[in-house]
Amino acid sequence: MDEAGLHKALERSRALGFLGPGPVSEHIVHGRAMAAALEAVPGRFLDLGSGGGVPGLVLALCWPEAHGTLLDSAARRCSFLRESVEALGMEDHLEVVHDRAERAGHQPELRERFDAVFARSFGHAAVTVECAAGFITVGGALVVSEPPGGGRNWPAEHLRELGLALDGPRVGRRSVVVFRKVASLDQRFPR
Image 1 (cartoon, rainbow, N blue to C red):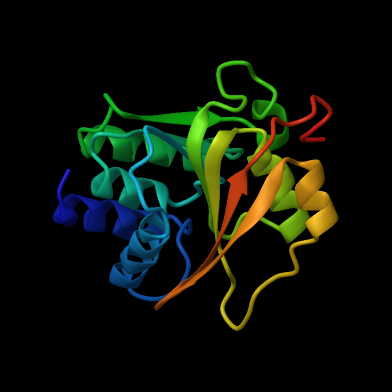
Image 2 (cartoon, helix red, strand yellow; image 1 turned 90 degrees about the vertical axis):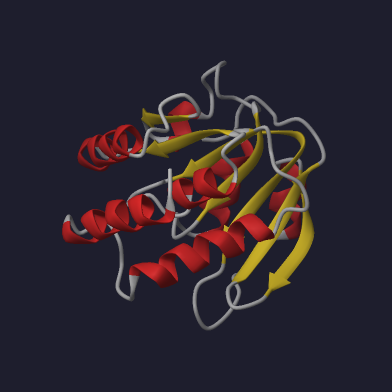
């Protein structure tokens, strides 16, 4: 996959209403900022609520040796994502899963199997960490994009209950927060 192919896929995403406002190049910069929050390339990553393909498609371009999973609950977005993966020639290391995060996080082939999970515009803080925790292997990371204009409240007690610990914010052009999975997740989560 090349930059031009990624740009074309994201322009199509915007035309379909899956990608928010602003130039496609800014969405690519945002995806790269999320990738830069990690010190090492993950073997497996998951884009939680992949939607229009950011950051998942961008991460796949940054890390062609990693295996990625794009998870989304909407059939129409998953169809777009599958077509984009095929058009970009990434079928060998990028898959699309159509399911709700709450349910997929309990599937044995997905539960606590990813070195890194990425969430951009997924949901409220508590929902994001609870859904993501089901996918992250112990020792892995959760990278969450903060909304423009400020950070969210990450309740420490809820994080501990999910086996997560705040690793810290990463501030650059885009602000992200990184969590580390320090303990296995209780089977009752995600709810």
